[in-house]
Amino acid sequence: MTLPNFLIIGAARSGTTSLYHYLRQHPDIFMSPIKEPNYYTDEDNLLDMPAIRSRAAYEALFADARGERAIGEASVRYLNAVAGIDRIHADLPGVRLIALLRQPADRAWSSSMGRFATGRETESPEEALKPGSYAFETSRYYARLRRYYDRFPRRQIKVILLEDLAANPQDVLREVFGFLGVDPGFIADTEIRHNAGVAPRSRFLNRLADSGMRFFRPMVPRWFLSRGLGVKLRRPILRAPEPMSPELRRRLIDLYRDDILATGELIGRDLSHWL
Image (cartoon, rainbow, N blue to C red; front, side, top):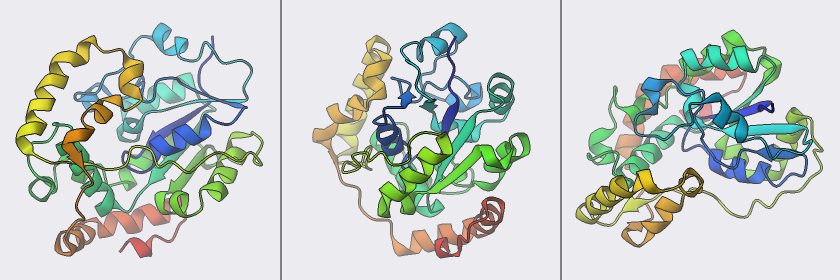
């Protein structure tokens, strides 16, 4: 039986897909062939996301590991977990946990744009980004991280800021490799930015594509979806997202202010530049 000894727990839209692809290049790291198996995700947090729920199917993800020192998977909704944390602690008490955080207003905007582009959100980001919405609330990091810090020793938790990964990917990877106990001198190819943000060119075409995806999704293998091929198929009707308006960004930052300060204190980082 092989189970992971590290997890990338989120946050969504914060560089987790890029980190997943960078880590899997290391010869002493084995990553689940399916990104986001969601095995430990709470049922009420799955929403419309596929998940592997049986223990046998989860273990099978790691059956091809051949002695790698670090074995991991990446499921961004683990950061939202409550009951799932108890399951992680019971199954993997010594697990190492990697969380990636992004300036919360920017992350919320990217999340809302992504949900709108894939048909999971019908309101525009300007309409949808308000307290209580999924995209808004999942940029509140403090309580979500606090649950992990309450259950696991600090030495088992590594927090990365997206701006650090983007500006100095090799330095960040060197730290992560050391955290995972593998050769920190390995140089990964970090030229590609994976899962970049997108927006729909047309609401009508987007709704049409979404209807088609909902019909065909149950027939498509998980490995196909886990590689972001659904978004690639929609590429002709997608475009680069427009920037968030300064007014909306300022309003969101003001709403996130207390959470930013509390999160910085929790993780031991000065996050005042996010304000």
